[in-house]
Image (spheres, rainbow, N blue to C red):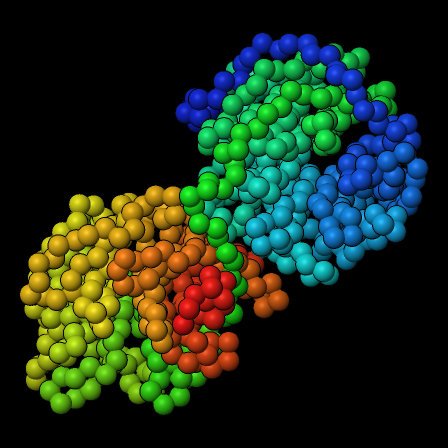
Length: 639
């Protein structure tokens, strides 16, 4: 056990050095500025929360109480509770507490106009001992609850009205005693009593996964905390945290993506401080510090300026949020399994159309429009898939899908029957070493060609041919990009190829085999497109065609005109459809889109994306269906 602890401490020290966060500044005694006093009636409160218009919530051993700005009690809810946290609400505030007896989290609606407190539907009884709780509000304005448990067992729940749903399970520090979330930076702060303060991604579908945690300040000898971390409060652009002894106040500010430690403030009070809360007014911020022994609150005004770097940069596009309408059954393998979808349109009844998706640990999956799995073809480690319909070979018509098979470095051809039944038809060997992405091209002159790439940047254009022996392939063009590619899509109408170089951006070139494959960059990795560049598809509208690109680095999707000058039309993310119980999507690999009328919400077509993190609750990856009409409305796209 000692060896394990020493190893953990060594790793923490190494990570901390990489952050280049200077935490060991000499403590300085800083006297309180002229305080705005806390009303005497609130002195015995164990926890305080400042509300709009100067009102207060106070939690003591007997009740949660609502006070006005003058300290007059307006309402009381008898309870034994702890861990008070709040968010703004149309009627005043939404509060949350943890019942000390049942350990059930209880939301409370604070009506400031009426001066009342209304208990809402409690969360279910947790299955583990809860150490602390805190709220988080995402960009979709959904409210979440973090239940931080003993031994690191933790959960994130979403709430809306009386609805309470588990989003995901988490692994957080084993000795966590306090947590708070910054809604603007989507960061969860957790203080570990015997070690330090950590930052995690609070958004379950955000670019920062929960595993990518960062130490902000640690105890000696790794940092400047005395004994570990205590209570904390989120500041604009930073965080304030007490050390475990409640003797020093540490202010950490985020500046241009890095964390800076300000000079440590020694709290020259008679007793140790065990709670901290934040209040803001026209003159700045106030930190409310609780002296448990003296049963009193001190008010401190720290010198605090925050960087505007946390705000969205002016040159970046705003991100609108659309909700999925359908999700597929999960794939049958955990981990990074699902990858790329393709949409097949039924010739006579579009409601019978199919979505094919690769499971790169198993084979090809076939789903209906309700997301139910209809087939599994165990063809091995398939990566990308694409399809074309109404192909003519020797006076016969075929619908074909083609996927890359990574174990054999081959192409697998699938025939799709008129009823949507899929069967494997052929395998075509390539001379690639690490086959990866693929997309199909149907020239206006007929036939079928496959663009396939290798992880080293090589591309091959393979012409599919049909004889009495079946389907074969012949290389008709080769070219290369400098680094790893994957996603691509061919514009059959205009004989253009769009391809993604994962770390650099989106290129375009002629799709014609006889043409010089001169590449030109149309969308570099920069402020709007975040590496990796992943799936691509083209939406053919009545008057406008659009290129959709997966920006995996920030879990968003870009929409461009599919013709020069390739105007960037907008950027969106896929959020939660809470009413349908469907989580959002993140870290998308492949996608496909169709403008066919599938009926109902999909009358203008649909986008299908791979979801890299299945939530609500956790599970194997799957695919999400999004109505094109929702995307077009959100981005104001012309037809």
